[in-house]
Image (cartoon, rainbow, N blue to C red; front, top):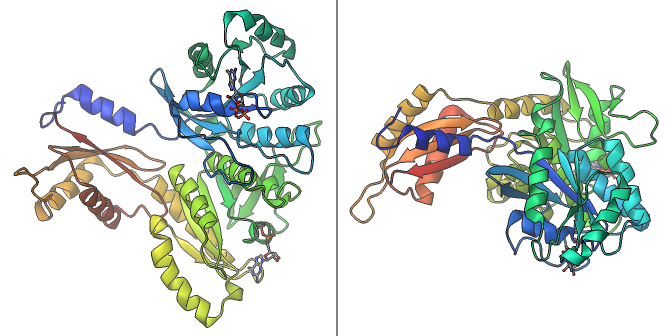
Amino acid sequence: AAQEGFDADEIEGALGEAGHGPLPVLAVVGRPNVGKSTLVNRIIGRREAVVEDKPGVTRDRVTYEAEWAGRRFKVVDTGGWEQDVLGIDASVAAQAEYAIEAADAVVFVVDATVGATDTDEAVVKLLRRAGKPVVLCANKVDGPSSEADAAMLWSLGLGEPMPVSALHGRGTGDMLDEVLKALPEAPAQTFGGVLGGPRRIALIGRPNVGKSSLLNKVAGEERVVVNELAGTTRDPVDELIELGGTTWKFVDTAGIRKRVHLQEGADYYASLRTAAAVEKAEVAVILIDASENISVQDQRIITMAVEAGRAVVIAYNKWDNLDEERRYYLEREIETELQQVAWAPRVNVSARTGRHMEKLVPAIETALAGWETRVPTGRLNAFLGELVAAHPHPIRGGKQPRILFGTQAGTKPPRFVLFASGFLEAGYRRFVERRLREEFGFEGTPIHISVRVRE
Ligand code: GDP
Ligand code: GDP
């Protein structure tokens, strides 16, 4: 029903928009220089997002939000390409593999002016094995005269090649229509599969924080490899591990154990893998080396998990390695450097000695519970009413904007829409978030608050 100057459609619309939950994921893969980054720029409709990469410069962003024909999805760009010791084919394949693993659908970009190469064929094999829907993008078809080049790519056996010029925008609309047909409404990784199946954990953190040590410690003899496809020599990707009487799925553990790719300088590579693991997971356990200062890279990984809207647990590892002095500074550092996840449960562990391993599962359970919390509308509005009465928004230009009512539009993570009589300042929004957390908990989860202002 209409409320306080908002009509029913408006309320409906705001809730639909805010309550979308996790978005389906599209991966854009292909050889270097086929135009992946140019295409990603087209898809996300922004220019600044992907600039030319200087070798050695870390690209910290690999996922972007996009919208086409009213549908929203995420795009994983593998354009920040780095060749490693394995050579070009293996490098392209490995990077495509991470992205494909986390994706609900894939755009495979081929340079139509070059035609299909051996490297392209190698990616086709991967795509077949993964079994995800694929849209074949025949790129660099800048004009009608090169449409024939695109037709040659039927030979890849991936269906109709979509002739596109990522540079000029030609054909990208038709291609995106195909993408929408291929993408599910909601990500399969999050909602699909077996309902009530094991919860999915991503164990992430910069190199050498102790991820593989921790995995080995918690897994013990319990590890069961899943997702191993018959007849392939592929690395196990996800593992089922029983902890505290419950079976959990640790995603992308192959990325934790396999070191061959992680040689010096392959930062982009690690970012891509972390982003893919986060996309697949419900909760991110972020490992930080307690014996060292919190680094920019730690912050970047935290941001990745928070922006992806995942439940978060912070695990300070190497606690056995702390002296009194470091412990003193660490407390201060946590207050200043970890503000963006002040709400996350923290455990101080040692993968070496096994210290506090038993605290990990309760922390994960707490974070997941926060992530799934739904506040009944009645309770929320009683709370908002009291809050507004006790702490009204400051008067601005003779007017006093007021929160009229609110609704939780979704969970995983919790998303709220507040309907207001005027613009709410950032400081007041932060205050509302703080009070919401004090009142309802939300431990271990980011929360989203959007505000609709009455026209
Ligand atoms: P990536 O390595 O696959 O991400 O490729 P980039 O997006 O960096 O593009 C490689 C080069 O191809 C750049 O010089 C682009 O300007 C160019 N390029 C990309 N798309 C097109 C296109 O549709 N037509 C033409 N003519 N050039 C393109
Ligand atoms: P990853 O790169 O994050 O997987 O880190 P590893 O598990 O390979 O650990 C990197 C190094 O840190 C190894 O030498 C480990 O033995 C050491 N390490 C891991 N956990 C601990 C810990 O709790 N305490 C101490 N002192 N060292 C640790």
